[in-house]
Length: 63
Image 1 (cartoon, rainbow, N blue to C red):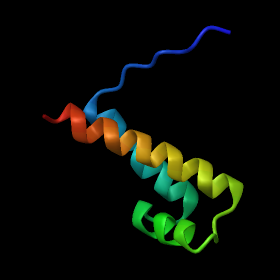
Image 2 (image 1 turned 45 degrees about the vertical axis):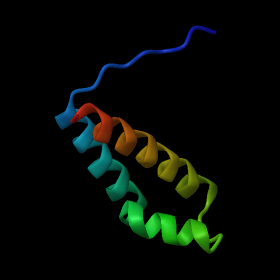
Image 3 (image 1 turned 45 degrees about the horizontal axis):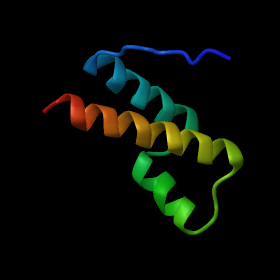
Image 4 (image 1 turned 135 degrees about the vertical axis):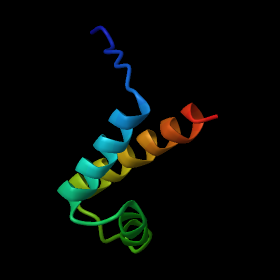
């Protein structure tokens, strides 16, 4: 299997973050709080992982 490489601009990352939060119906902070209390579904956990990955990329791209 060949890995897929996707190049995103900072505005695209911001847009994806907003889409994921809308899909989850909660902010990344709220999802983290739920995760700390073991209240996230598998889908919520997957969304949180994607949010954290995109946030990391956004923070490091802006340097």
